[in-house]
Amino acid sequence: MYQFLIAKRDGPVEYLTLNRREVRNAFNEGLIAELTDWAARTGEAAARYELRVVVLAGAGTVFSAGADGEPYLRIERLTYICGLLGLNEMVQAHLGEQLHESDRALKFGLQVVSHMNIKCKELSKHHGINLVIEESPAESAAYRLAKLDMKYHPDRAGRVIKGSLANNEYYYTNSVHLAPDAPVDYIERVRKQGLFHPLMEAGAFVHIWLGESEPSPESIKKFVIKTYEQTDAEQIAFSPEFTVCEDCRRTSRGLSETCPRCESDNVYGITRVVGYFSKIQTWNKGKLGELKERVRVNVDDEPVWAEAETEAVAG
Image (cartoon, rainbow, N blue to C red; front, side, top):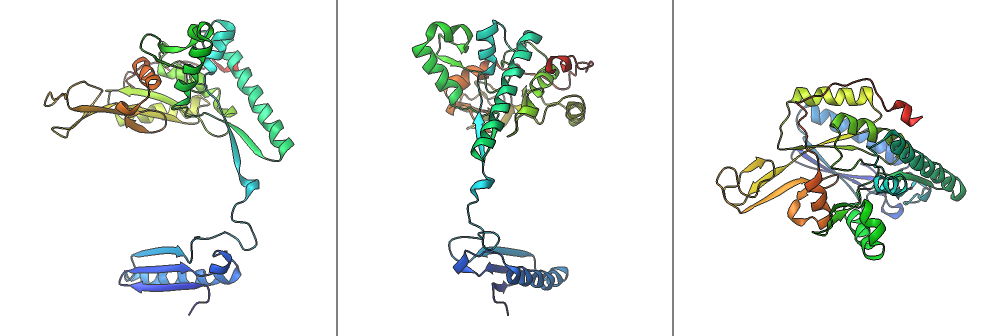
């Protein structure tokens, strides 16, 4: 029936295979025409509830190389990423102040990242590539680089590094973030970090560490709306913490050494390490140091959204 498609029906399941194996199932006008015809026929079957599932595959080892005549890997479409971490400590080393401690420090940080953004554009043009700044997750680099600096430059690194030097739980603050223990409310944190986001073309977000609190959906909704109406923040991440008990199999809010329900100590904690949740028992020492210094908030305890005070800083 078809030249470039193989269609087989098994009850309510249709198995559809792109069958241009010799060109890695690349799309041409004939394949597109057959797919259009197939979609019309199966649409009628689906409307009669005779078809419920379609399994789509490609003949051979490749699903599809895309449009006919184009290479499978399009180098010119790749984006190269310049990761960034420790801006807070760099500013502190130069000015003696962290990003949250003065407008001068925040402005200096913005100037540094703005310069990096310009250099990425210059390099992109020179080399014919797309190079952008990313808010690097730095799950291991924030600890590894801090550890190397403490080994080779202990005097200078020790003055700005975060965490506990005594317990070897030290780290550099991730990307353009304010220090995790910065004594600022979460609105100020979102506002100030959000000033950097237009310069981070590969994406950026602000953590809202919830701890054991469980804010109402209405409070989260209001905060999200105000964030996107009144700040430059691209994304915010609400990050709660949990304790999982291996004995009673219950999950509780917050991080505890024992289960709040059955009092067993056979427990483990889960929270966001960077962009995803994981067991804190698997974290490196630097991340454990950061975890202890995170400022937890309750979004239900909503401070007043005053007029933006950081707009002049960004100028």
